[in-house]
Length: 375
Image (cartoon, rainbow, N blue to C red):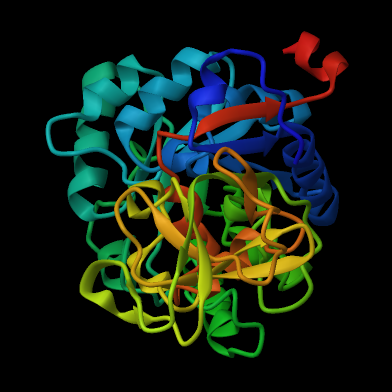
């Protein structure tokens, strides 16, 4: 990526994170078309997967999203201030004693257990009418949701409970060969049959790609919106982020010299190193030591030694001596290495990389002028 040095605070940054809001829009439209006529909601928990709720939320609404999901109530409160006219579901429901705050902030709880259902029904009686909510079923993941036994509790499903959505979550959707998704789907159908006519939602990002049988009336993509591959196959989604780090220092070491905390890497021959101003405080994990690399144009440059809080050491011996100097730029996430590929070097997934991106990057949000002016 080309950066313009213009005397602003961006010049002082050790790394730049670029967020392509046009690519985000393309991903939403692609997913929405793929699941039609089902509604395509948008999951924006964890500050829109680390990319910035205040920027991402309005773009997704402009693209057509009318239903949003967050994890915590505080995230819902923040989103409501940005988007006053959309439906906002809170996946964790509410903590004990906080039901009325959901109502005050015009948020819809996802009811996950009997205590939440009971508290929401009690509030409905107090208000004088049934309040909208979603009900989540545990179809086999053993994480959130009402069990079949819970649904059999006398009086639990009376007229004071009128959900506008019933839902569950797939455990193995990113494993297309797994048979458990089909098992969960059947369980979900059985549990949802207790609420005839209520819209159903089973699939998040990866579940969308299992086919129309998993779409029902609403899907809940999160990571797919931000360019994360839905499974192990070719990624049909547009890359939303790029990450570039700057060289802080260039140095030469001799054969036998060792590098980094614990001196875990030893140079076998004379080596040139570049120190980059990015580390585990920025989401570049310690587990990536000895595995990860960055790129200079078409040249892969491996990480050597341990990852520090604020820096990593890169072997740049493959480049001509005068190629790099302090302030120059290397690609961490970009055309040669997407976020999923970077994640694999740390034994993790793209979700974790995105949600761990540090606050120290200079952030650039790219959007077509016409779209930007309409938001």
